Length: 98
Image (cartoon, rainbow, N blue to C red; front, side, top):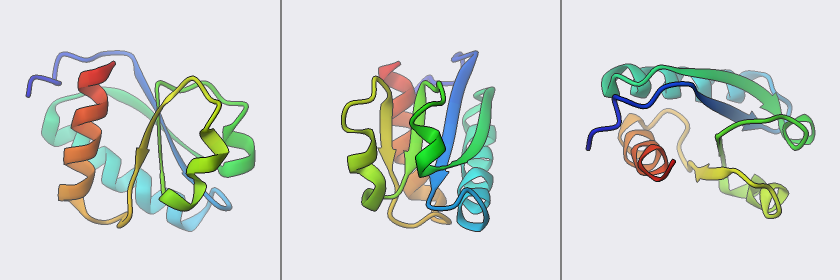
């Protein structure tokens, strides 16, 4: 997969409150992006605020998926926020689709 050439990608890590688990999610995203050689702006948000923020990709848990059903954004659903392999596979697919 050649996703390393992607530039100016914005990613929003979304959790319930925009605090602890969102930061963990962002750390996993950052780690994967580094491995893939992709430069992206990664921000953290709570689910309510995320709806009004612009991003190319939203990364969140399946429990928040319905909050983005009408959003014009690529949604990546992660079950285990610290699973680098799950994140790498799903985020790579999303980056390919941009």
